[in-house]
Length: 510
Image (cartoon, rainbow, N blue to C red; front, side, top):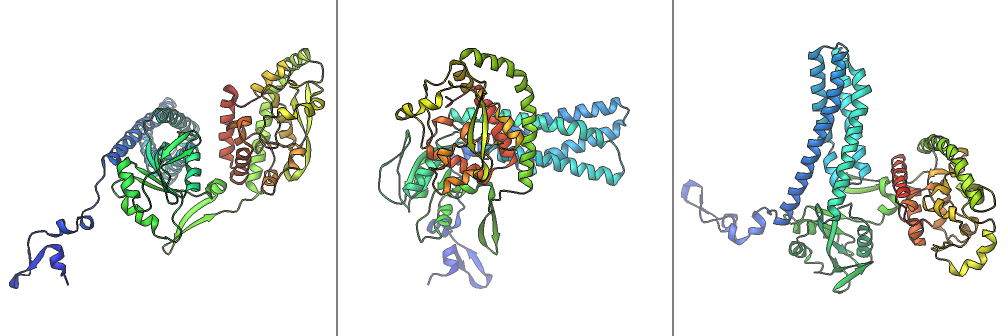
């Protein structure tokens, strides 16, 4: 049997103990004793990550300095002590920057959704001001009031604006092929197609697929949508394929059946080659923010919180609905005379159109809209059924002859839906939610689609900011179900913001 000394390259010598001889181990077992070195591709990725983080850091310093400096100047004008003012301003700047770095907000800016980044910035800001307030209380100093009234909202607003601007710039760069991760997707065909289809919809995640490895089948190319991706390697050669492709992110869409150590072995193969090993699961499509990860005595666990459809968060959603609806109805009331006159002059009939829709728990309500069709539209529907261009149970026509000239403009700009804020105010609808269905549509639902009725329908939703009438029926249902189970106040605010942009640049509205 080979001794330890022989493997490591040592020999015993007399009474002097171990004597170093030629290091044979470096030639015999290099993969076991030499730590993996980063490849050129991995170094390039780290380099652009550091560059982007440095841009954010410089901007964070500038925004915080501006907000705190302006507040300090106001304090000095009010007669505050220059020494106390300078000390407090310096501490706040240091704390604020430390919290932004300590909570990894600049890491989140690279590969996380915008909501995660913005929430992290707000959390870091709250921590910084909280620590400073505690310090002021313990040292019996005064002057926090102006910091809370001026520096906090101004600094947070400037930080959010700068992060939003940099994120837009990053998306533009990624659309041009920069600041992206070369990505290899591994798994069985169905799972790989699902991941590729999801990632190909947007470049904002920065994951550019350069190839796939299928654990089943031996195809040479995988076609998903309008894209074709080379199929390379097999179960045992994923690491080599990643090196050959220069892939720095590996997404495991599924693992081989009965091979519990596949992911661990793959992570070892990728050391020095890739920066990330991402595990994909279709569970996240319906559970997203309800997932949490933890280890229990070395056992990795994924916890999934069961959704609830009542409670405090829903009360907050209702309060947000009432506030937004009240604010929206004021300008709508001012626009009403002009829109009413245009609708009346274009075609005879009422200004408003009332239609029965199905709300939460299957309750019927009258949804109100500005009339965009002729008054005999319902009678003409039967004759137009064969020309239906809608998806699934929906009836849609891009050139519907029942739509009036003014109605076409109202629909294009989504102005016909503005009176629905009244439905929100009285509690029939929410600002954000699933699309309000017709009773005839609900009768055609299968089991899972009824889940759309667990919460109030919305004026806008994921379906409206993701393509509206251009969506397939299955995609529309998937978006609605994902919203029903994963909504949050933050996501509602995001959807409202995206809706405003869609109204300015309409797509799929007819």
